[in-house]
Amino acid sequence: DAGITQSPRHKVTETGTPVTLRCHQTENHRYMYWYRQDPGHGLRLIHYSYGVKDTDKGEVSDGYSVSRSKTEDFLLTLESATSSQTSVYFCAIREQGANYGYTFGSGTRLTVV
Amino acid sequence: QQQVKQSPQSLIVQKGGIPIINCAYENTAFDYFPWYQQFPGKGPALLIAIRPDVSEKKEGRFTISFNKSAKQFSLHIMDSQPGDSATYFCAASISLAGGGNKLTFGTGTQLKVEL
Image (cartoon, rainbow over all chains, first blue to last red):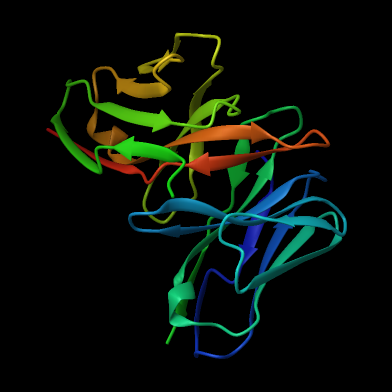
């Protein structure tokens, strides 16, 4: 099973503050993804990465930025958190050779007050 | 705009029943269709997947039926058990230049299997 760790697991922050969520993997997978999960919307892609320093936008990227300076770490930053960004955030990696075999982390529950 | 439409939003069945979850898509560039199962407090986990050139795939009690002409696919759970109570997501994969892919998910179906 791919080792994928998200931190923190829970966070409460104030509107307007910057927030960074971390995704760490232990198996050198090339592709990493950030999704947010909201009731009635399922999982929506925020950003993804296809290698160190190689990232691209997903369908709900406004207000978010990402960085990948090492293969194992993919960071998601909310530059100035808003209440609409209250959500559960999931990181995923794509298993080698598997077009659909994403492995998800356990999620970060973020509340913006 | 939801590229993958999933129904129903919630479903309650009796133990041993066969819940059916349906999904529809528009984009013919989608080339893989996985289903994910999610338990409370956990991330989604891959359950079963199908290619568009196959009409049916079975893995244990889980079956995907795929209708390419109608752009629809569905998940059937045979002999459902209380342990199958979870949220189920359909998804569709699109390939990216350079060899990767990205998944677009449906909105999810909350299944409850009662004794």
